Length: 273
Image (cartoon, rainbow, N blue to C red; front, top):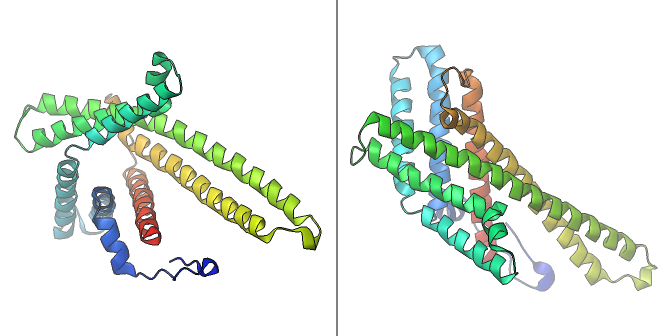
């Protein structure tokens, strides 16, 4: 909840229902909510196997739910790769306007991330169609789609982490610069201090701390998702994450971070209205 009484603006008022509507009216919000429910179901089913046995009704229900959500998320991503194509186009145009060479435009981290993430979402549509029995029904074809989809996903995380590291460093540098400026401002004689300038610097510092924290959380999330996808991407017999509980906790952590990011965006959208 936010307010800006210092500027005479009315206090923003919204409740949990408003936040839920803002979150779920977006495709990304629905996708990340389903992701959280899916990994929670996987974790619950795995833990219930030890407590009640693999044949218990709860395990069967939780397993059916997570499989259904997995297919639903793939269907929900229909055409999502076009957003990555758009990001790639905009990045190349922006680089061209800045006089960047053709080679550097295409090999930049932002361009590579958009290209690989788009390839991942495009291949995931093939996985969905194959599992639905619509096309490419052969198991060998499905296995290849899953493998190359995971490879594109893992590689996209490499460049995404690189971008987030750059963002975190930029935020840290900007924060330190504004902290020095604020210190100099406050070190003046009391009657010379510009309170408006000091308040502006404080807001900038607070905003940069939030952006830095988001970048760090994005790095943790991407690294976690990359670990989860590594086994499918490598597809080498004997190379796997064998500790089931560890894998499930990682999946739940990645889903929670993803959901947290989209929830924060939904709340910000309400603040901006």
